[in-house]
Image (cartoon, rainbow, N blue to C red; front, side, top):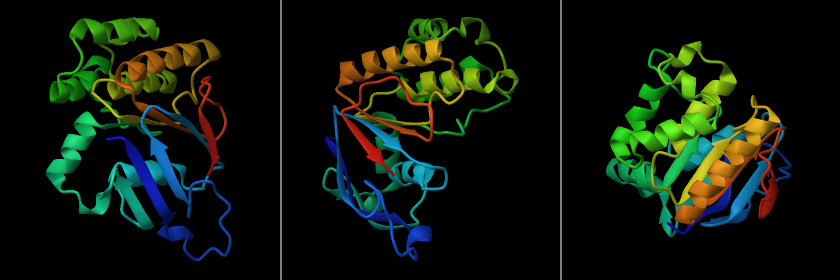
Length: 214
């Protein structure tokens, strides 16, 4: 997949608004593989909705979203499964970890589907992110910042053309934010993947190619 193309896309809930001032909504916008994008927004402007639209979890929008030249509303379940395993990785704001499972078990579920990372690579990521001692800790016993790092590791356990990160460092200190940035760049540069980050405040310390206002 080389590009994501939004054509006059708009959440249906915004359809009755008289004026939409946005670099994303109701525009012809292309996200290119290999480029990095920061989407800045205020709360309630549809940031998480955008992630859910592109990941195929929600369809309550106007306009068209295409992967390359394919309208995503035409994709089959099998095609979506392959895309989520091989092309698009998503770190949701609410993380979507299984609280009753350990940190490592949460990663293992994803990695068993993709077979992308070796166990020692995953453990190495835990250690780099300062949570090497949390492998066997239940996810619901971790702080939110620790959970963010677990979810970040999980997002890296697949091949990707694009990775979306919805407020990935909202609960991280500056030192850990830099570590996340460095790991993200290393992983995406290996694959030539595009990076799309959303934020309502604290930004990932990355020199983005493009900054958009939602």
